[in-house]
Each structure stands twice: as structure tokens, then as C-alpha cells.
Image 1 (cartoon, helix red, strand yellow):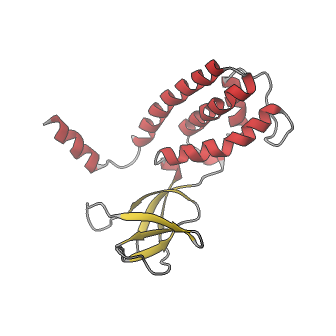
Image 2 (cartoon, rainbow, N blue to C red):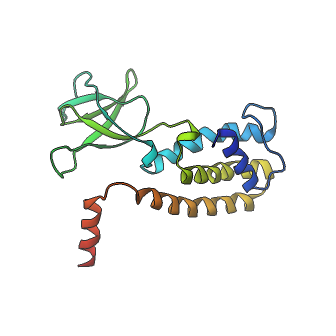
Image 3 (cartoon, rainbow, N blue to C red):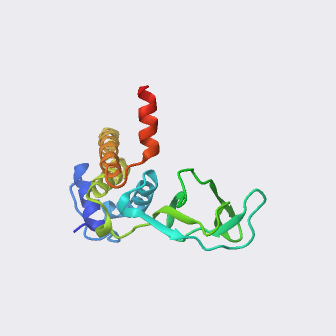
Length: 194
């Protein structure tokens, strides 16, 4: 089973760190840097791709009056890291929306769709829910961030970045291969061949 500590220990092993951690809050340098970078690296990765394990659907809650140019305004879901699309139950057209914010009330989603349903990437913090490929990618993302402060080596940081980038490509490709087929992507590919 994955845990924040096991993910960080794999990251530390990637860079050849001599010590492992038992907790992100212990007083070691390794724990200090893992604690600084872990959550940010996780959330950044969740936003980089529409991960299957983190994708959710919700019918949005209408709130207030939409600004000019839009018909409806909805509350931005509290666990949303990336609003992907307004689900179109009626056809194949892409439904336009925009994420807006104001300093007093936070974020909103505006669209011309009544009773809009949003597909979004959720803020998943439980490592047991993570896809195996995402865990591997996250270990390299943390390794990249902690390599130089812990080892003083820019080459270890560079190596971690290279492996991270290669892992990102293969992991997102595998994740994208699961689930429904996107006819729009197929059409673009077929069109390009003509």
C-alpha cells in the first residue's frame, strides 16, 4: 500500500539519499524537504493530466447572477483542481465555459448551460487511491525537487528530471488508453492522414 512516507522514501532512494524517513514531520533534513515539496508535487501532477482515478462528475450548484455574456453562474467545486469540461448530454459540440473569481467569494464557473454537469480533476490526497503509474511519477517529481537541496548535486537533479519527463510521457499515455474513445481525437488523426 502506498503512503506519503513510502512515496517520499522511494524519491529519496532515486537520488541516492542515505537516510529514509518515518514521518514527514520528523526533524531530519530529508523529512523537511519532502514535507515542503510533496503536496505541491502531487497537486501539480494532478493538474497536468486528466487522470482516470481522479476524474469526477458533479452537477454544479447555481449561485448568484452570471456576468454579462454568460447565462448561468455556478459554484466552483471545493475539491476541484482542474475543470475539464461541461458535459454535453445532448450532442457532440464542445460547451463553452469559463472559470472566474472575485476576491470576496472565490471561484465560479460561468456557462450558457442550464443545470450544468462538470467533469473535473479532483484533489485526491489519499495515496491508496492513486494509480500505480501516478505513484511512480510522483516519486520522480519529489526526487527532482529534493535532489539538489539534499545532495548538493545538480546532476542528480537533472537525472531525476529526465526520468520524470520520460515517465510522464509513458504514464499519461497508458492512463489515456483506458476508458472511452474520444471521437474528436480520432477525427483529427484521420483528417491528418488525408
